[in-house]
Image (cartoon, rainbow over all chains, first blue to last red):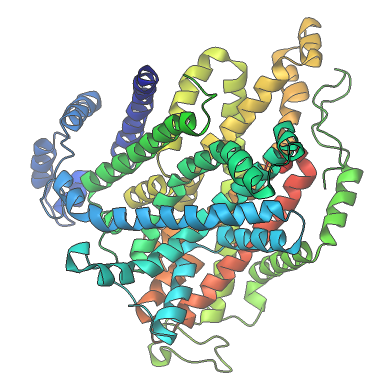
Length: 313
Length: 302
């Protein structure tokens, strides 16, 4: 098991190197001179040259990549052009709201989507199934930011149940913290619930056709036990997989949701950095999100063995 | 649902290796699917969006970028069917021209990513040495959340229709490559391909006639999802301010422009939001139908 995890960790290294290479290439090879962006519109050629030198942009591109990776390995993501703070520090100060939002979304999704999928599968072809599938198509199609504004209009502006926007850290008390997290979580969960409910339904439907389910029925096991103990457990692998893959859409959703609800998290930091063309920050955040994505999928792979002991590594 | 024939993967080498069932059967199946009410509604909605965007200039619109400071935030009037925005621009006209942008982006991203992905995928599936390198690069691109990759590309090149299109297309390419590569790998060992090889069939004929046709059906299905995802990505980018500038009206940047006044004029955000949602909804429903008809193997899984 441990050997497997180590092996899997090693296997992510080439992908991470590839990601670093792609990110580096995009930011250095696209038209648009970072020195010119930093210097502003009315810089002289001499000033540009000085900035280029101080940023190491006058070196050959391979040297630049080497230096950059070297810093990266030491946990140094460079300094923000906008605020002159280290990128790592900047990320640290903004990670809270994002973690809170992502966690509550995943929890809500699992709590809602898995039962929805099971209900749909049990009532396959009936109106309950159609209802769940319809909700899922809606959740899939209506963009996060549209859901967000509809929620604000309905629950905040019309009914006044929740604050419109903003964020309070947990340190300010749980109620204000949770109150401001409800709408963003609901908005962000839409796509995710759709995705997970759909997969849960189809995997349960598939498992219910297996021989061992017929055997369980034949020995007189209760339908409920069959569903929860036999079917759901066997359907867990695809469900967990899609939760892992869905992290990519979760990251997109975080960026959008934080913008709609004015949450000062990493997603907003991305947008701020983009608008200011603060490229060390953009680079750092893309790397962070990509590595998170890779690592979560590694965890998912390891979780397989928990849900399905037949999978041995 | 799945009464249609399984994709005929293995066929005699004299018969062109077509992946899809005959066109007549397909047409009948699509017509049959249209009888279901949600699919019919989706078809009508999508047709309306196409008509609105194509005929935008003659449907009572005015210049969608004409600024009119005297008429800021106009309500619904005879001149402005859906009111005006913070610059006095006509919301109705912007909605219709926005539909154009969405469809152009969706169509463009679909065509370009399939064209490029098909070539790379065939090379990767057929030439084993190139495969290793290509798939590593594709894995790298796929590991970067596509919206971030697109944001980075647009932010560095500036928001024009062309750069936004490129930024949306690049993250889609690896998915097409994987799909095509998978199909090529699976047909490589089919007896009819081996027979063709042993008959001395030249490589381009082997690829074009015996292998590539198998990718058509899955690519049409994938294409419909790329179309929807590209429209969504463009709207998201423009909404975040990292997409098209508001001189090119798009549903995303209309929402971005309107969000500051959301409490005052929710319509500025909601009208484009509803158009966007309806479009995506109809495309996704029609895409599912296409998948059921063209790709029964996948349909059973999904």
